[in-house]
Image 1: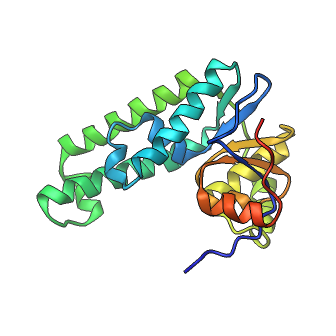
Image 2 (image 1 turned 90 degrees about the horizontal axis):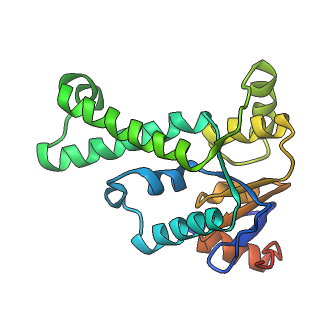
Length: 208
């Protein structure tokens, strides 16, 4: 079934865009996952799709743009890495409950920890932190946002915290189509579904 996207963000196709020196990008978890995790091919991601994002990140750094991350991303990144390691483990060991995988095999647990630590150290080496506060006011506002913007819980808190921090125009590099429905932000993506919908709805910005 085709996803009906009501495009509200400004969409930029990274396959043709040239990052600028004054760009300040928030890099989404899915892109950090592809950039930093040694077994991202096991995640089911398309190799050419991954290459497009990694090339764009590299070009952004070469051109003097700033990449940023939030500590909120660590929770989602660790979750995705563990889930991927779990799937890889079951391919050779058969099915077992996630809790057993997490607690019963110490060597495997240490492997997951090492992968997460390695990924996060790379994030910190490539980007600068954006210090965000998640307090009661932030979560209340996030729930209000949840009523009108179809994003998941991780993205919900991240968007609200950034908005309340007064970080100016939000520029996010992501493959996640959910961000496309958020007004007032710029989404840098190679997601063809988002790009096609944005073109039809005249929300596709000219490449620079």
